[in-house]
Amino acid sequence: MSALEQSTIEWLRSCHFTVGDPALWREALTHGSTNEAISYERLEFLGDRVLGLSIAEWLYREDDRAEGQLAQRLNVLVSKGNCAQVARGLGVSDHVRLDRQAREDGAQHGENVLGDVMEALLGANFLEAGFDATRDLVHRLWRDQVAGGAGRSKHPKSALQEWAAGNRRRPPQYELVDRSGPDHAARFTVRVTVANVGSAEAQASSKQEAETLAAKNFMEQYG
Figure 1 (tube, one colour):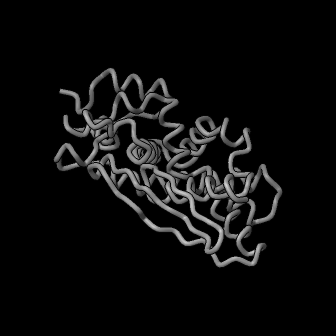
Figure 2 (cartoon, helix red, strand yellow):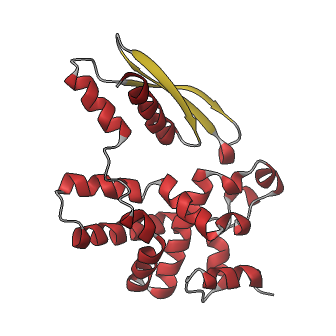
């Protein structure tokens, strides 16, 4: 019996992944909620590094701006949210392996799970086909984000930090207001405050993303 459903193998190949060992790809698609001996976490660790190097090399060759601006673009392009966006475009949600409760909670659609699985799939492809083939795959999957200029605008938290300094205000303070939901579908509410100016809140599936959205909301309200 195959370690992975044939329909999933065919889907992976249609997305241009190099599938050799089905057990490896089963691991890349398996969430920790299944209580199996495997999960995608180790492959996610590997894929994160492969993605980072692939995008960094790409930007170095195609974008002649300064190091700080390249770093800003890199951080956005490899972010969990951007990885999740790519994963949604591929239909990853239909193939993630979770337990019944996590699926009923909608974890397969969450930013954290989709972003992690996307990185795990890149890690699996690296083990199967090597760096060059995986870099080419990243170029294919991230083409729209790079061509569309993702990350060219200043990150909202950096923009707020500079705004506060430019207006002689204290640095913005971020506070975790609430955390709700199970670990695989957690929701974080963050408030950002600039003393003697005001505050703004936002909610997201990760604390970092909630901070980013809160900073964006603050700038839209007060900036």
